[in-house]
Length: 284
Image (cartoon, rainbow, N blue to C red; front, side):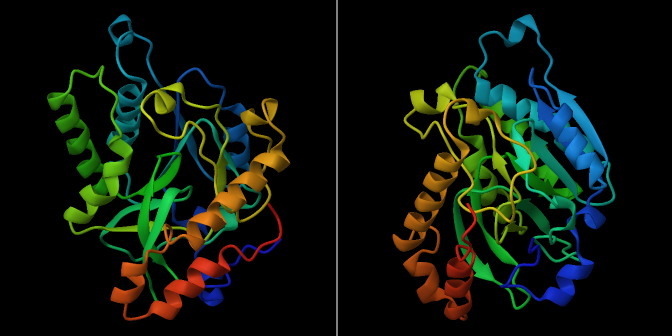
């Protein structure tokens, strides 16, 4: 399998493996089993800790999106105590094979790291550095890396939402993370390809509020390490094919790489090559 990104400097990637730059992995869950996920991550060298949402009577009428944010907040609080960046994944994240050896999606000496998504949804690319590191936007907090500094910003953000809402209102808080951290002069990164898949079942709360109830990784670095939950509803091949087609469609219609971004860039060719090359993969 090919782990190096063709858009990035391979000399840097060979020494900047993901597992060597992550302090801990926090797995966010409610009632889902995390045994298989923990096994895969532990086997490649990550140190994992499961953060399970408490089931309290006062949570009964709260929005699922709000409860999800508060569970992530518990991981953010732990992340502020770490000396190195922290990887946070939700229980339905399915890593690709060899995830630990995949390249760090941001420079290892990045002092103003905001967030680096390992799984992207509705992604956009803003810029690509000479070493191939891409800054951009994503929503969905299925798998991402944060620093202690950005974790504190996210904690403050969660407290603001808590004070403004009663908790029973649906919130697309994850779509605001990029603009929040950028306003704090931090830099956010998207990967060349996704490090895993969102393996969860459709979220009825998304559909109820007019959003797509299903989101999948458009293109993966490698084969999945185990089968996701959704294969009980549709064949994996068909699901991955749909995701690849949708990803290519977003590229062709200027949603991944927007025309104004190209026109305003000093290195438009580099942006275009990044956007195209990530899809030059026959495997689904």
